[in-house]
Length: 400
Image 1 (cartoon, rainbow, N blue to C red):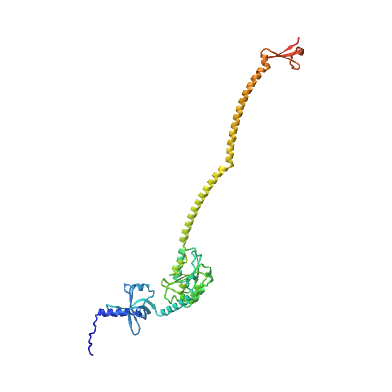
Image 2 (cartoon, rainbow, N blue to C red):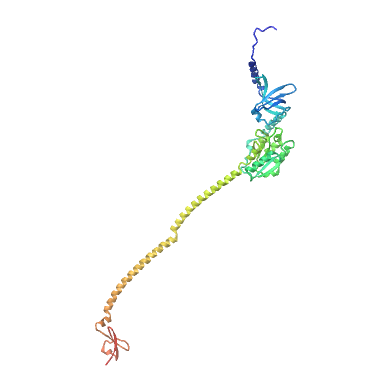
């Protein structure tokens, strides 16, 4: 081999490794890749990271999943499991190893289900089944809550405990249904259309978490259409917070968990009602006291006006006037009597001065006939028996 006129470039191990890493990380197709294989050499150290090897019949690939991604993973990994791993290719420079930095792991087959999920989601979305305008409000104080879920699942127990704690007054109508497997979709549709639930104010459609296969019944087109066409508002509480199904998009409200669905179905709790009643009692009491005070003031004002306009007041005034007139009349009568008495006394004295008795007192006498009492003023009138009236009495005389 003829030597080159230009000497070949010599790299350090670090520099060459850095160059290879740069080439791999600048390749966009290797930074967003799904790799299928069988798990082996699975390791979970105390750090929380997950280390394993992904292999097939002809090759193997070192993989690492950091603690933050591993904490979000619901799948339980084990050696020999066929999986699809998503991540990016990089270089672990201290050992010169290329490896897959994983952020998602799913069982083999989930990819096809996810593609079907996206296809059906696009179809139903185009039909308007997920339009926000179709969403109906959840009643604030439902009297009846319908539940469609498995009768034996923990989700039902959690929802009943939540409803009992938040609003024990509510009536719960349960229509049990399988929530997994080939029999689940038609059973869920039948349960949603059950006459038992038609008197409900709101319906909760729920189940616990699981893999995409476990939750697939809630991606079934028949179930999704039944949810969208329901005459009663529906709250979807399927799986855990990170799980999404097509029923979530078709429902009037999506809850992250079955327990959260029960909470959303009871916006007003028994504690809220008690506080409202207490506030209303206080308001009624204060309003009643204010009304009583206002009416009492008005009553006192009217009573004052009534007292001013009352006949009793006029009667009292006139009674006082009568008393005054009576007093004045009595005084006038008394003065009149005194005056008349004086006048009478004067007249009496004048009469007394003119009285025959006064004349008699001066030595005169009055002679009357005894038989008829006539006064004898002439001799011819004298009779045999006569009476003589003097100042201190009378006596009889006979004619001689």
